[in-house]
Amino acid sequence: MSDVTPVVFVVDDDISVRESLELMIRFAGWQPRLFESAQAFLNEPRPLVPCCLVLDINLPDLSGLDLQASIAQDRRNMPIIFITGYGDIPRTVRALKAGAVEFLTKPFDDEVILNAMADALETSRAALDGEKNLHALRQAYQTLTPREQEIMAMVVSGRLNKVIASDLRISEITVKAHRGKVMRKMKARSLAQLVKMSALIMPEH
Image (cartoon, rainbow, N blue to C red; front, side, top):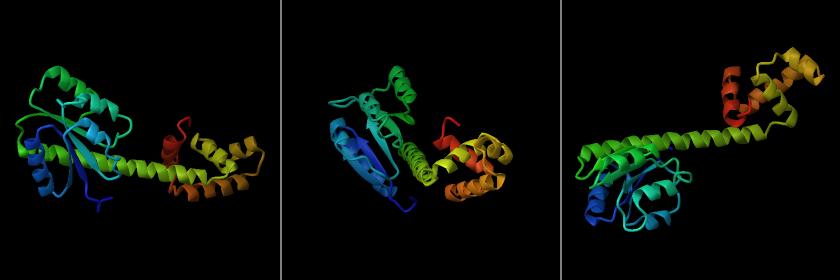
């Protein structure tokens, strides 16, 4: 994902702010996408590249805080940087508690907002990589046979091969063979790594 151009979304009803941020974003090497309202932004498809949202708290339709709430589940890999000309402590606290990564009052320093964007895009990149890895783990888990899934659950719970063999009434050699297949299919280099994988895809274990 390192060769993909990150996207910075800007939602602000002030055209001068949008134009100023557009120049800044392009200069930094990112792709700007500008909107004058929350609804216009919501009509945009969810991107599958590293991205962040620079969001004015005061908008003509939905407020910035309402927009933040509406995309909280669908766009969790899109960090939000709030900007406002009318900052106040209660709204700042509400925005940050809801997951905003920064809250800047206009006029803001160019370097400050550029650094905030860079940090937000790195957070987004890490989140997308995590989603991709989790998807690959779930796909690998689905390639296991029911018996292999059963043995994987017993292995990561700490049971020894001989105990598993006794519980399932099969030979210890058979357990070792299944265990080897589980490790190969899951691409786990160690038991510790398999345990970490199981924590992601098998929460009950």
